[in-house]
Image 1 (spheres, rainbow, N blue to C red):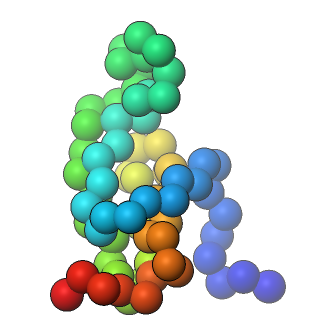
Image 2: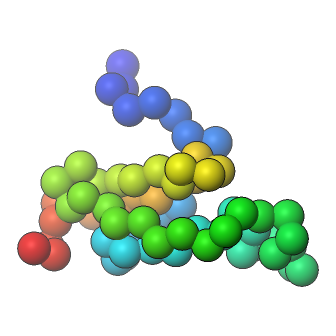
Length: 68
């Protein structure tokens, strides 16, 4: 069993700093999203969730760090 709760959508990223607006993948969807927020991923944890849409951003490499 996984100790991480499942997220509605998971995005794999290569940077510890990501932006989320909830609608960047929807053509013309800016009005459907939420205010753009910047999220910092803790390299030790390896993921962070958006507080608005619960999208989970997972650091490629499983959170092994590399950015300190």
